[in-house]
Length: 557
Image (tube, rainbow, N blue to C red):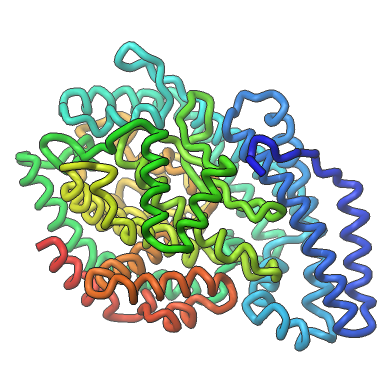
């Protein structure tokens, strides 16, 4: 079914409460494993039906944040989702504590129970009010970012539509664009500070109500981390700083020389060639058509996937002024349908949507047929391997998108991925600082970010910009507001994608077979074990980056 034709009906909380309380009671009273399993399958249906309605409403609201009907639905779900989570939590507890757990583990696996335990540790009815307030604050932030109006070049543009100017070939235009971009953030700085301050204090209050010292431990449970802990992440960040940052700085210097500059400014941070970054050929519709041709050639599985996406209009990728910023992939269970949301803006990022978000969607398409719903509940450090690796697996088709500049695109793609690792790691360390010190003032948080920039990206020069120059850059990073501690996942995944990049250059089919196996494994196994099963190294191991950097330097030549 085409997305536009999918029927929507508001989830009725009273009916959900009645159904979930009955399922919870029957889980507790199940006389044997067979009865419990039958009850659990009914739970799957109730859960997926509700999730589908929430997902459809969410997508349609994001598509137009000024739509009155779906704005009202968003407000309704901001209030209702924490109460729903509590109902699910009560059911999970009954299922988790069942005397038939051994039989259920044979049905759904040990990973599912580890995830369930994390859920039980991160939700309780006592924090419903705080969760509702948190949701409202996130919605407020997203609307503020989505509805930005920036006068530039005779137009009024949103943040996404400013992107081509921020990476413009003309350095003077870039500088003026960044000034206009910065001016918008200055104009809403107080509100951004207020929203984030309230979010930090809200999340800290949730953590304390659940018995934690601060939000860090709760944040890890909320991210469903059950294969590594804070110490593993600290060790990973240490290796990034000691081994990868010096390498990334060498790559930045190589780019500086290519641009013919004495010193890199922040306005040059995402510019790779003196004649500008390679941009895709053709209209947005033509880019999607080229993507379809690419996936038809890549494999039988990707052909089936992308034809399904196009036939059912499951991509909303065209930029609009009132559309939420950013991009994501989500899934609608009833139709076995992944959905891709993004904002095309005429840059190479448009092709990234057709590769990165399609990596997510392809995995969802492959694993979404699994009747065990818990197997779809992949953790994000795994999910991002699917997306970031697909960016590299599609490299042989980049000439179709970029024409004679495709080789330059491949250089930019690899250098940009290298550039990301220190930044993404810095985002993670910043969030640890913030939530370990929840009473920091807005100015102190910005100082902390500024200090981290000196460690992770010492080449940066903000030219005394009034917003970015004093440590405000993080406020444009939606994950920091919306999904605390969801960012190191990208970095871990990027390093795994680098492994695939080296592998596919030597044995493309072998690397693809491993990737397909990883997609099919979904959440059936724990992170480290899963990586080993498909032939990848685990990023937390000491010495991990030395070999990786050596291979990347060989790729750069």
